[in-house]
Image 1 (cartoon, rainbow, N blue to C red):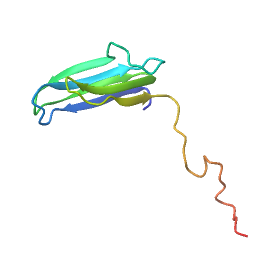
Image 2 (cartoon, one colour; image 1 turned 60 degrees about the vertical axis):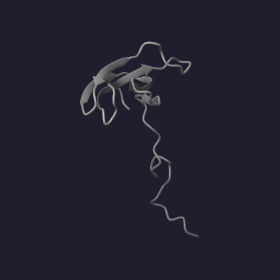
Image 3 (cartoon, rainbow, N blue to C red; image 1 turned 45 degrees about the vertical axis):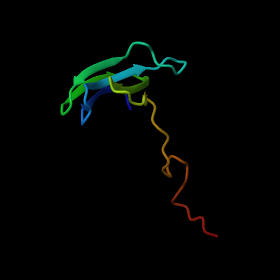
Image 4 (tube, one colour; image 1 turned 120 degrees about the vertical axis):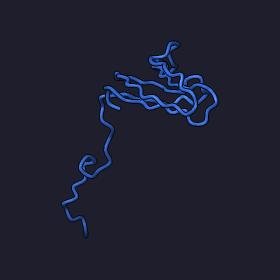
Length: 99
């Protein structure tokens, strides 16, 4: 993702207790910081909420709050991902390479 504001929609579908969202910034070592960058939500079954969060460049993980889920990576960077199209690979598609 590019740095900026993002909306995260959290739904509680058939979970019998409150759920939410936590985002942790990662240290240079790759370990998550002790205090969450963002933590909110007490959504009971059948409810949803949209959180608008401004993310700065960095590495994060996000997970469910109160709900034991995996920690998913979230990378925020100004860099563009390498493209695999012919132009960026330096391939001249206009030349005829048949022998």
